[in-house]
Image (cartoon, rainbow, N blue to C red):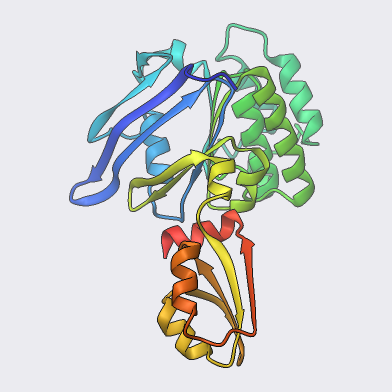
Amino acid sequence: MKKDNVVLEIINLKKYYGKVRGVEDVSIKLNSGEVYGFIGPNGAGKSTTIRTLMGLINKTSGDIFINGKEFDKNDTSLKKEIGYLPSEINLYDDLTVREILDYHESFYDKKVNKRRKELVKLFLLDESKKIEDLSLGNSKKLGIILSLMHSPKILILDEPTSGLDPIMQNTFYELLLEEKKKGTTILYSTHILSEVAKICDRIGFIKDGKIIKEDIRENIEKDNITYLTINSKEIEKIKKELNLKVIDESIDKIKFINNLSPDILIKKLSNFKIDKLLIEEVSIEDLFIEYYK
């Protein structure tokens, strides 16, 4: 991944629907060849950010730049450099897969048929089927092919694996890693945390329309949060003293997500009889819980 080679930049993006908040303040920079995990629960503002970025809805304020050029939704030259996969695929039901792919090919001056055939073969998609007869998984496969067949330099993915079976999910991850090697810049929006660890270089957590934390994946995984498991006959007193989020509990054993420093933790536990103490690294999933509690 090349550093300081900004391909996509969103600055102080805000979107309101009347008085209802869509996005409050989102600023993101994506470098060439980078996979950026855009993480948050449903309703946090992920899809609104992406739809605004794509020019599907108008922003309230803020700026969007692609390769240093302010994004204009009417600029077809910029749009040809972008591949977009929405969270829900809505196409012309009365067309066949082949017809919709032919139609999509007609948008581009460059030859995209070879890449189209490669992707159709990879995802085992039957081109003779009508759109209305496709399963959710096959609709998602078609959406993936449409977003990639013109070899975009920027790929915008909104909940891309919903509907895919585990085998096709792995095929998709491998495909994205190949795209990354080619230098494709990828914005990957999801609420499925296990996906992030597989492919993302950096992660941004969005909550209530704002980015609340952003860092490279390795730093986030090493964040100052741990699992803390304690065996003791004084569980209730310890729980009250530490005031941490409990993720498992029995009569004489309790497991917390801990964000206290070792020094503070030792001081707080010094007044209790501890039979056993275990501190472990946490997963991104539990960091997600910590950030959104």
